Image (cartoon, rainbow, N blue to C red):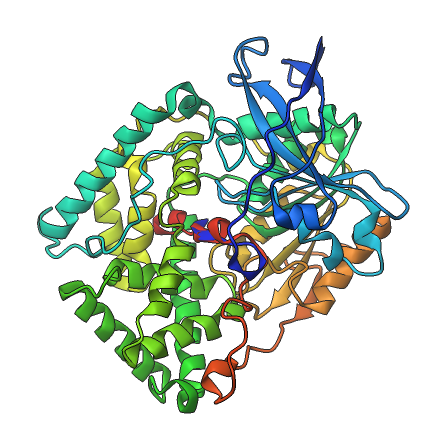
Length: 544
């Protein structure tokens, strides 16, 4: 998760929403295993607004759920859902969540089914959904749509001895943002916790008329899967958890330190890759030289932003190096063009990666993270922790700090997060994780494996891509395909390590743009997750 940064759909195109469709609601109510009455509903399926979903023949609708699950007959909100029906021998429904918190999953049925080869992907009804408060669900949270408009103040405090200058400006901006969230979103802000979404997922199951679900969760979506399996263990048939969040999410401590350390490592590997292609990029012939050029440009932008790009915007763009190696050529292109005086590519990258003009994902991220569990409401403590962390990890500490900074001033109290108990589930679970994944370090997956005795972990050895499943590694894809086809998994090994290993994919080659040929589509290298979701997977990184 950043679960910091936001994420994009394939080709980095913004995810469009489903058409506004009515939902037929039954007055009947049933009790679930958690002891809360759940209204039964049937989904009135209709046309989707998204061209991607329409293009594959998907249909869209809404599921009404209680705003407050402790008051099941009270006010309702609507969860936007999409469905791409199975065309082969049907094995049931498969819900998918891309993470965040705050990532839209509505368009994923247009992306993932064909990534599962041999027709296995077409054996399921793929169900995308926007979690409560997100995207096309109603209402959708928003606090200040202009919050990411650049240039913004520099991230790193100018004076560590006192709060002044750019840091004081960030404190003021962050307080104002948190207050705007309270002023503009009403009661839903108190009902954006992970457990609310877990219950919404079961409402979707019921509305679909299914006894069990299959599930594919990425990043924070893996925590939703863990919590769902713990709460409704008899309602899970198969579950893939890709790039794992630890069972004790959310936490303020070592998990965040692991993220920041991971981003420091992947940034170093990106600098090394750029140096290896110095003929194309001319940004330095060693990793050290490229890093020096990066931080020199950062210092210059701190003093004098250029257009919409200041040092904060520059850092946000390059934080994406920790999400997918396939993005490296696009990022290096933007940087190399910048050095020639062409600023347009970098400005475009920042605008898309940060969803400038739309803060829905950011608002939903904080609405969930800040209320899911105990979070320091003491700015001084958080500041001191960040100062200590930044001494060791220069690359991503302060950017991640400010991404989840609103938690220090959040207007809604935290509650206890869902309790994850892997002993309750009996069906096999497939875990996937790259060993050098920055947003969700490999240690997280080992902890999930320990918690769920029926799970099997596949490692992408040396990989640095977040969301490794169905992302081009044929070895990993085969494990996913075999599991979804008939439940086949490798034997669970003794000890606390991976149960099977896949070799990483080769690092990418420079784009055509800097090989003297005509450039291809500028965004072709972007990972399959929606861009708003990817960037959203980073901010918890600042937590030590």
